[in-house]
Amino acid sequence: MFDTATQASPCHSCARRKTCLGGALVENMNERAPTVTRCVIDKGNHLFRSGDTADTLYVVRSGATKTYVVSAEGEEEIRGFQLANDVAGLDAVCSDAHRGNAKAIGRTWVCRLPAAAVRARMGESSSFRERVLSSLGREFERLHTMLHRERCSADQRVASFLLAQLPVNSSGATEAQDALELPMSRTDLARYLDLATETVSRVFTRLQTRNIVRSQGARCEIVDRAALRALI
Amino acid sequence: MFDTATQASPCHSCARRKTCLGGALVENMNERAPTVTRCVIDKGNHLFRSGDTADTLYVVRSGATKTYVVSAEGEEEIRGFQLANDVAGLDAVCSDAHRGNAKAIGRTWVCRLPAAAVRARMGESSSFRERVLSSLGREFERLHTMLHRERCSADQRVASFLLAQLPVNSSGATEAQDALELPMSRTDLARYLDLATETVSRVFTRLQTRNIVRSQGARCEIVDRAALRALI
DNA sequence: CGCGGATTTGACATAGTTCAATTCGAGTGG
DNA sequence: CCACTCGAATTGAACTATGTCAAATCCGCG
View 1 (tube, each protein chain N blue to C red):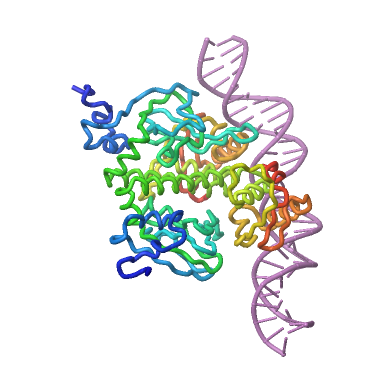
View 2 (tube, each protein chain N blue to C red):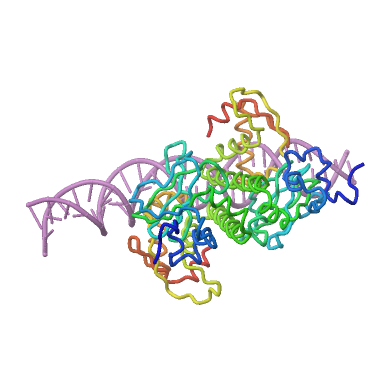
């Protein structure tokens, strides 16, 4: 009783359709819904490369991706990580070609949304238009946060990053201990924060010594959230 | 024969209506065109402040503005300069409240566009929608450029900034000498590039010594564009 | 002409990089 | 189950670009 020929998109029967951009895209469009497809990207494979026609948006279902550009010196400058429910290549809504590369950090399931359908739907549904604009707004906010972060000390950059990984909690006062699974390598984290890997490493040991975090490989436990906030 | 009661907006009779966002907004909307107003902002006065309801976009006609946030230490972190034809507060399209402050650097003429009208028009006219999306795309591009710039040396940051100020010339090969009028103070430039004022000053003298630029106060002449590009 | 802020120059301090060496840890094969 | 391997992560030591502080100079404006 699901996904017949009359329902091209897996979004209609997806558990996340209420919160996902794909769900918003196909809402009230049963018959003429655009074709959303799911696929798996193996570790290290690209979703898109710089210069590719920006015809597709990728919503991460599970796993993680990174977007990056390659600098003149051949170094990867990481511009963002996309975890579950994040969108890779959101700039496809705003331009014809992708301005960077997107690569799977581990084995990653994504949903592919046609950018043209997203743009067209913005003209039809004001609620969908607001939805996309607010996603763009959050992306602006993220870039501004990055800009601010790169004007801080190494400790502050890592602290700010860790806090940004924490699930949002507006009341904030809880200070509960919290475990994080960081999907990216220290090297990638360093390339994201614009620090040397060695520096990131030193910051983590420093934070561990001061009993602010307990870090072991990908697993990172925030012991003292308040102290982390106080660093910034 | 201009600006009667039936033409609320000065855009209809504006010489720049073909290229300005305001012109695009009122196009084919003679009777029910949204109310665009012009006004002058004196040096140092704010267009909007962080937290203000994002109900207005400002197109700069003449003069210049800066957008900035105030850091925890009370320092101005400058996020962008808006010169003629640039938009200050473009994020008003994407969110309810402004995420930063905007202030006139000198006496500045601006046109105020109602953000609600811009959002609404995006639903009515696909060409206007594409126009706004491409403006948002250029803003993304600018932020990515800033992000890259802040990962460079002081010399490279200044070089990259100066090249970005140069009028775009896709053929690029001309290497013609070019004069720039920088509307912002060295201090503001330093706050934009995330450098100490002293460092910016030293970079300018260094570039002058190497006969790459001739700088005198606000006036800055690019003598050797190729050398500037080679720095990056 | 003289004032006050902006800019430039100089001397020194330091956070973070770089290079080099060591340790860790996830796979792999015996 | 343990030894082995290779890349990733950590630690250490020395270097450097840029910041900071202080002083001198410039410049626009009354």
